Length: 193
Image 1 (cartoon, rainbow, N blue to C red):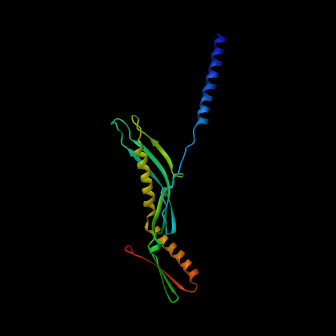
Image 2: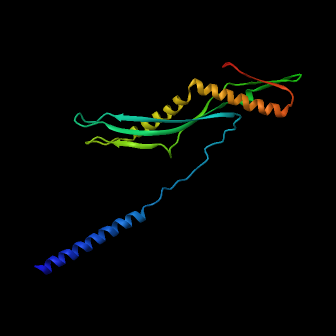
Image 3: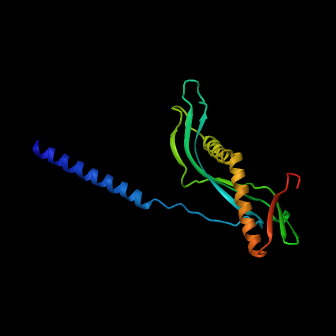
């Protein structure tokens, strides 16, 4: 009986070693993600970035269950993102010089870009239903809501005012260097331009 127990013990050890080696092989043979990029287009810009707004928030997306007896699928994201305020179209700017006075008229600063930082945004919780898991529309809804959260948080009136003051300071500094001794005035175009 001792001999049979020893054989079973050795066989169990061999099976465990083989199983762990197979697991190691799978881990080592996992292929890295392959990425190819293609430039889809180039857009010339004429803008002045004045303020970057960092945003954090939480998004919860819920997908109703397919079956009455199932639970809903949920995805919760801890969102990190940013937005840039800037003068969007410097080609619309006007510079008027009268004696020793320089008047610069600019389009008002707006959010020119906003994005979700995919590297810093984290999936905090994800669970599917018991009978049917979540489909990709849940992920799409969560990431779309994250982008909307970043843009909405960035569009506060005080951020627009800070961007306006920063753009004024930048333009005044540049104009004073170009026209030393001149009075520099920055004005803003209304929405109709």
